[in-house]
Image (cartoon, rainbow, N blue to C red; front, side):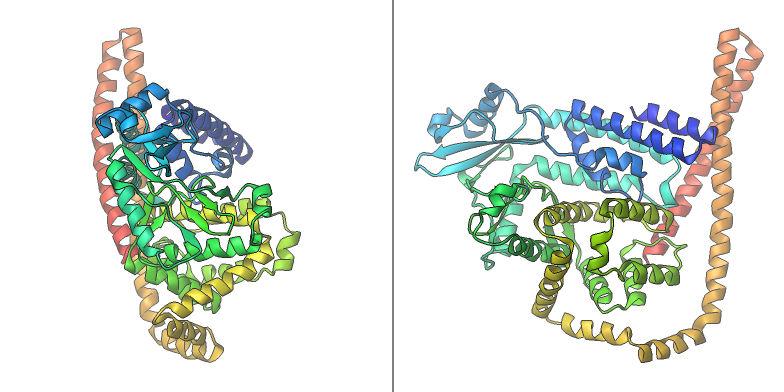
Length: 525
């Protein structure tokens, strides 16, 4: 599938197809990708879910085809599941359980969940690893590593600085952790401790004596899906209150150092009849460093106080802006984006606006750093649930007080918020602009010199790499022609051209890679 997609893209590039044809091509590629991942299951569904949030990298035609992927696959044969449980528990199921329903209540790419009853009559949720999933995932990883290598060396890197190897490494770490249910048990204990004093959250208990690396036995908790309109309408609390509680639960996860739930889809986040938010399935979690949490907090405070220069500075430190980004342009863009009133949003086509935003993001020197891919997945999943619970103006009215309440609980952030607000005022801006003006000549000279050197080096290496790749392809065509016509001179010349151009191609690829790594570190610093 990947090689066919590569040939299609290269063919369209060579023929210089118009934008409308490219949009149709990406739609076809998206359909084929979607069909293939559901046929092969395993790791590929999770990869599709991650790609669906990368609007900063992928065309809208492709994103539209994969944006609603759900991790739902057919359950395994009961005999195989029973065999795993007996092997893990060291005996027949009757020794550990009073009863187990042989029909799975949930089935995903890595695990399946069954409802059972313990000897003391307590209902439990039994999560079992799918049969042979370890070998399937290893095969998927090997295949993916080949694709990553090919993409890294032969496909033009979007916006120049996306590191597919880092993305692959992070994905592998998360999936390997998800395959070990002992790790999930540890994550579950972490979240229990984190929310132990929060009444609006329910985390199920774990039965450690029955849990193993392949089986996780938890307290059975009844809840209503946030997408179940009929069930939500019968709750003791309003939909706006549910939305408020959902924000209260996830906002600290996104802004404070530590682990966050990276897979909060509608099957993993439920609500009790009393309005408690129930969190399930801690197999996929991410982690935010103390440094990143500090900048995220500063970013939101800057946006609320309308201190856009500080917001752009935070985005730079977090790695969202590429070196060529013009801070003033981005400041103006933030002013425009955040000047919408709720009344205006009502009159807009929000889907069209979102697609337009995707185009804008792709046109700007902006990227989502690989370490925030899982955070983005968490945020977008929760955003979707919030939109099903409340209108745009209700969400805006709920979000700000929840954030301000969270801010008031922090030790130092209240004063930093006042500082950001002061920085956004005209007098401070005047003083700051004057001091910056004095430093401007030297700054401009340094920026100009660095930019010229960067552009010059990049252009040389990139042009050589493209030319050598085309020459290598030409050599392969010559080899095929020589073999077909049995012409030894053509064959020998073609082999010589292929070998020389291929070696030079890898030399310049290595040089370009070294240079780009240096620029990446420079940008982060």
